Image 1: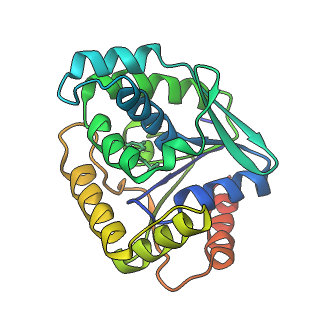
Image 2: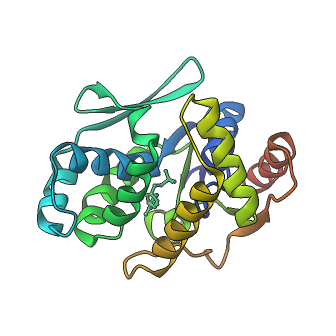
Length: 221
Ligand code: DC
C-alpha cells in the first residue's frame, strides 16, 4: 500500500495533534478514526439509543454520513451535514465512544469506511487498531503513548483551552477507564502491532515528538 502512516495508542497520548501536524508537513490526508466512533456515540446520545442495543447502534453507524475536512488548520467533522467538531469532544461523548467502539456491529460499519478513505494513499490515520486490523499493510506504524499522569494533564489542559470546565482527577479517571475498556474489549482491542515503533512521549514537547515521527515516516517511504 502506498504511503500509509498508522498511529495507534491510548487516550490522550497526543495522537491527533501529531497525526494532524504530520499530515500537514507531508501534505497527506489526515483521517481521525476516533472521531468516527465519537460521531456515532454522539448520534446515539442524541437519539437516546440504549447502549446495549448493539443492532441499533450498528444501524446508526451504517447510516451515519461522516465527513472530514481541513479548515483553517482544524479538522472539522460533519455528521449528516452538521458540524459536530466541538460536541464530539465532550467528556460524556468520550465515554460513550469507548463503549460503542467495543461493539463488533459498529466496527463492521466503520472499518470499511476507514479503508475506503485511506485507499487513495498518502494518508495518516490515528486510532487504536489501525496498524493491527484496519490497515495491517501500512508502510509506517507508530505506537504513541505517554504516562497516565501526563496524558491526563494534556487532556485536562486541552479541555480548559477549549473553554470547558474540567477536573484533573476526573479526567485522569476517565482516561484510565477508557484505556481499560479499549485494551480489554474482545473485538480489535488496543495493542501495539508487532512491527510498530513504540514511542513514549512522556516529557517530550509536541515539536520533539513531531521531529521523531517525521524521521520515522521518511525512513519508511
Ligand atoms: O482517539 P479518540 O479518543 O478520539 O477515540 C474515541 C474512542 O473510540 C476510544 O475510546 C476508542 C475508540 N476508537 C477505536 O476503538 N478504534 C479506533 N480506531 C479509534 C478510536
